[in-house]
Amino acid sequence: MNSSSTELPRFECPKFDTKRYEYLIPHTKSNNTSTIHYFFALNLRSNLPILPRLLGSLVEVIRFLGPENCAVSIVEGNSDDGTAEVLSALRKPLTKLPTTYHLRSSAIDPSTGDRIPRLAALRNLAIQPLLTTPRSILAPPNETTILFLNDVTPCPDDLLELLHQRRRLNAHMTCAMDWTYVGRDPTFYDMWIARDLNGEAFFEVPPDGNWNSAWNLFWKNPDAYARYSAHQPFQVFSCWNGATAFTAEPILLEKVTFRGPRLPEGECMQGEPQLFCKDLWWNGYSRIAVVPSISLEYSNDRGKQIKEAKGWTSQWWKEADSAEIIWRKEPPEKVKCIPNYENQTWEAWNKSQPGV
Image (cartoon, rainbow, N blue to C red; front, side, top):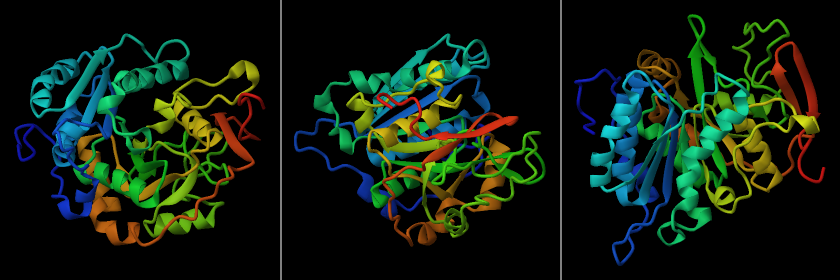
């Protein structure tokens, strides 16, 4: 709750420019009642070491946007390291701000049984409170934003930049870039989910599963590579990449939810975020973009390291705002299906969709 505290380990984030993001603060209603414009959703399990940075940034953003304009929903997964206790202790200060705070624990374990449907169920539990919130205290569906966070270590301006670029670009969904260190150098992480506008993976992985070509991002998409290299947002078919901001409209209108693959109908075995994006396209929400100026990692030490390697978000404001996106309404005809690296095929983007 104290952004300047150094009592617990977390890397220090730069102060964000309030002028850049102040337009994101909703206007206060004349009767001073709250209206929820921003809904923050998280699934956390045994993530104690990153909570100071993750939750610290979240609290800073909520204070800036106006606590009464925000709601937080966290589903905790039977942690054994104190994560549940920290999340429970957060209830009193968040409520005092005041921010609407939903916390529940779930016994759903993605490591057993069908992994993807279980992950989808956990994500649906995180957004369930939004569906049961009285519409009288919600902003209109098309003005309500869900910001879904994985167990990353973001700075406050990473989250605000996702919201800013979604608003600036009139996007339905914006994603960061997430990274991991499988060796000395950082590697793009969310390979299984992310597909460019040609339906291709962000880099090539051969059947033997090696990531030796991870440095060669967008090797078949020069337009995406040019924008990525210039730190400019670019349209994709699907992304998640550690953190994403998307319109709540398809959720509130019950057009889209998280789900597992329709295997009996022959749908590709793929992750629930990719299926979420596929269903967004099917329902006309095709403006999905990656914001490459936002770089995230999954630990304190590596989180700071990736910022030093790729640049802090604030370093790339000018570049990030320097170009619009000419949105393409048509999805790629086919999307690469990668249930595993040994079996990679191309299938129609809308395979198994209702009525197809």
